[in-house]
Image 1 (cartoon, rainbow, N blue to C red):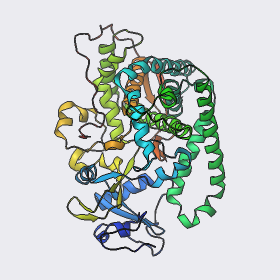
Image 2: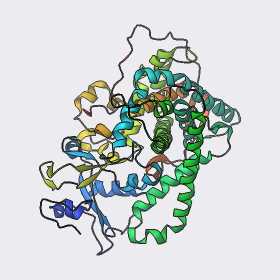
Image 3: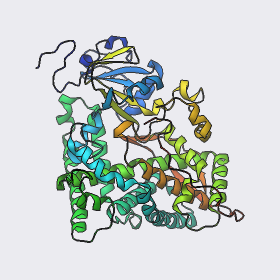
Image 4: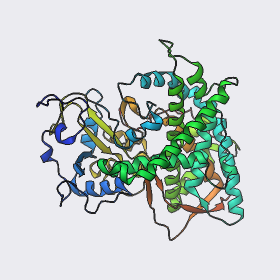
Length: 503
């Protein structure tokens, strides 16, 4: 092992015990057991919610240890603001993200900062999320949403409740597949999830399990799961290879896949390699639908439980869209209250619930905790969004008016992070937010949502978060008096979805 001094770290360093010289200052759960750590009462199926439980008790920075692997967690608003300083901290690829590298490799989400394909892919693909590109995707988003509503009309007519997470997953998979890659998975014509979704959930679940199974025992305890994961990854690769092969034989469509295949870097002209294109397509198909489907599902859950908020959101849709059958691209941006509903859902349950940051050089976090170069911390976004110093004593309450413009301006920076932070924040965040706002507006205008009285929100974890077992009953919404579209208001400029983040 490389020699370690107080200021130098062995190459590849990642251990908290070496990276945090004053680690003893940071609290940990009581009853730590030698060699195995903080395993008493741990919930391996819900590690994020388990850590939230400890964080509420231990404070805005704490640590947990499992079989020799110690992790520092941070959720306090002031500390997260410090970790968001790009001059001192960078994205850390660890835990579940690194576990996805066998299938996603150096794709945008899983690439290490030093890997050149991240910057190359980012610069090639960024124009694919411009305002002009988004306006081009809008009609396809509408087409897929109408397929969802056809399905929900049939379920409503038959008196059946709808499977919200399942149908939102079909919606978002078809949307990213069609807009980004010109592919139709036929999800709404299937009685079961598309095999791509099954394989995707399998790889995410396996990555989650590897987080909580001790490293030395992982090959033994996860032998069967590892074989299934290999089969899942092989299916994802085959599916994407088929999509790419079909596109190479066809004319270009100007979408994300075309950019990957036919566009070079705007300065150097360098192209993405075939292997990297596969990894980017998998990244977009997985990340581009899994998190958005969760966000929509949580939003629909909260709307079903708050009829007064639903009425206010529906009034806005009726007022802004009027009786236009297919709202235009600019009309979606005018649904400001509907967007607040979405933001508030992402606050309480950010579907990408954590992100990791590592020190670029020796530094001191918040002026209190020394960190050596390479030391890292896991930011618990779901607790950051509940910090009572930022969000008040009622932080657990669902209240879209927290995202009123005046309230946003009054909050400190870096306190709302559903898409990560800095240069490595989600490249598709505007795509996801436009799609989700459009879908919520369409569903609010068409249906009244009735919850199952006996249902209590349960959150499933597979790296991302999703309501577990959420089903809603539908009634057709009462027709509102015709209202002309709001034409006198100038289109609102696209605003940063990480509101007040100063990114």
